[in-house]
Image (cartoon, rainbow, N blue to C red; front, side):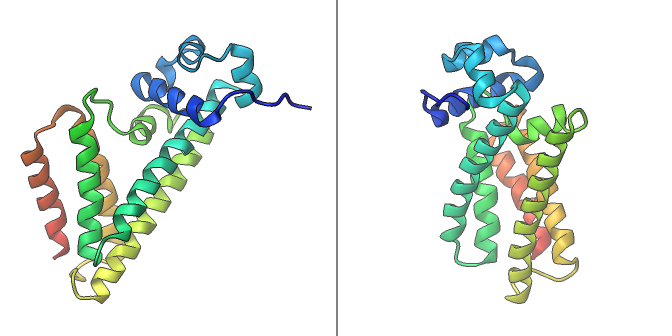
Amino acid sequence: MPKEETFNRVQVLEKATEVFHKKGYNGTSMQDLVDATSLNRSSIYNSFGSKLNMFLEVLSFYQSVHSKNFSRGLANSYNAKEAIETIFSLHLNEIITDNDRKGCLVINCKSEMANQEISIKSFMEKNQERMIAMFEDIVTKGQMEKIFNQEQTANQYALYLFSSIQGLRMIGILNKNEEELKNLIHITTKILY
């Protein structure tokens, strides 16, 4: 029978997230995780199984926190246009407030690990499908409301918007000029109108 955890799992995941976000998966050692979480190695292995399993849980935790933030923002959107603007605004705000220039953990992981580990690739594929489906729903509503044009299908626009967000996040690691980034968002989204 597994031992009962005597630590706050959410706090441990928050601390592990900080380390993985700063150093990446390959740059993070077990000692880094021990130091950050104040757990010993055996506790980490007993609770998470491996560094990879811990990282996968960190990715899910990170995604869940961001999904809640986006859901709150989208719930306050009046129409599809506002929903798209909200999504880009939330990403822009994360870029501007990212003083350490870490970027997005999920996007960083995609470039670092998606082709190295099948479980990471699976996580990334599911995340991508979820994000594209969200954009497709919004664009479909916008096209039905005659807010967005129908020059492309909702799925084509969704893939375009998803790739644009990823590009914005990558550019935002080095470029924190808010006006330039806002202009880039404007250029990106005006294709819908």
